[in-house]
Length: 121
Picture 1 (cartoon, one colour):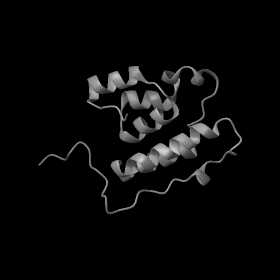
Picture 2: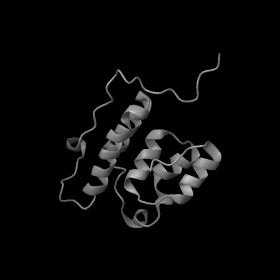
Picture 3: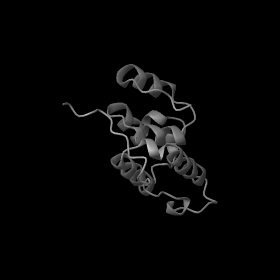
């Protein structure tokens, strides 16, 4: 029997803990709002992620990939997580990139057409 494409995390196991205290920047930093959005989005979707996806999300936070500086402020398509999601989407990348950018119509359309993802709105 083939393995399912997506294995849901067990609802009986708590998700990996990611808190605002894990963010290595001060709340007065202009990037803090992006980081907070990423953490809040995680908790809205953590039970829908596999443990591997939860660990990846945790790593995205540790690597501070929520920061939007330089061209990343206006060009989400240049963001490493955006490109990774486009090439090899998973729920962690999808939720993370949507948390730090408001509108990603091109990515959503690509994922819908190529990978049958739907929006989280």
